[in-house]
Image (cartoon, rainbow, N blue to C red; front, side):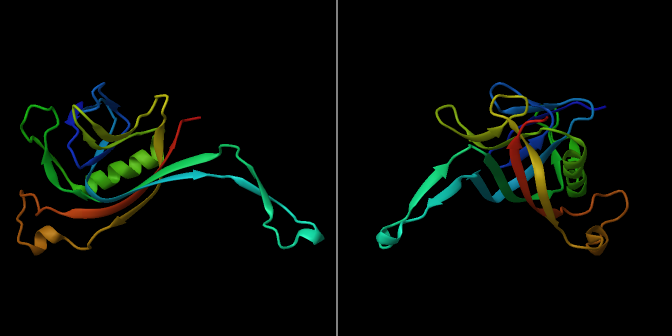
Length: 193
């Protein structure tokens, strides 16, 4: 199997079952591990949902005009999710971090890789945002860490039908024109049982 080393680009989102270096700038995959790049995400929603139980205390007859009391039970049943909108695209990428774009990855392959991660893999690593030497604006949900990784909860792909390459005049032996597949993916934070 192939081993890949991918540099984390600013503005892109990466989902992998591989590992990330200590500086959080290089993702490494070995064997059958997968890394998928979601190109500039147009929208990212982070949702923190704490399932709090509200126990209303009724007022007596004589105090009907008073505001009722509420008792709150906070069991810390927290659910954290991230929803990312972006696109998967055909492109040449640098898989060994030597500065040459030496491997072609199609949008369809990236879609299949995401489905494989969702169906057959456990805890994943999600990284997106910018990491500067002074400030860290990077979101990292790293598998096998104290902060916990994530799992793919839901995906929606938007694509055009038909063979675009044939419509645009591509001939055999040539790659079809670049193609994008829109994606809306929801990941939930947690750890493998």
